[in-house]
Length: 141
Image 1: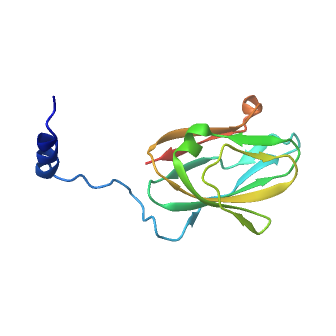
Image 2: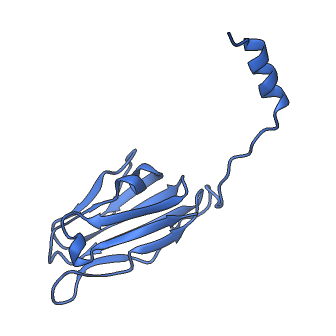
């Protein structure tokens, strides 16, 4: 049986471990290059899509769609490992506790303001359009 005294003593004697984060959480969000989907004659081209970011730093990502193809952007592992500050659509701020997908059926844009909280490589895609190249990756250090 473990003694509560021993657990407390071990906690007090062990050096504290600082939180590990590369960025500055309270700083202004850094704008990432916009992700534009539905480009080209086919509507299956995109600009950007691969991002290198660090934990603990605020970012904003503008996502634009031409509306040529419906795109439900999914990235469950990425969405599970970020803190979403807000989402802006048509100058309306939406405060949410998390994201599951961003569905763009028509032409439009959305801005996501977030902080990465866990290092790793996280993929995203337009569900059902992966073979067409509508994919990308967030590399979080």
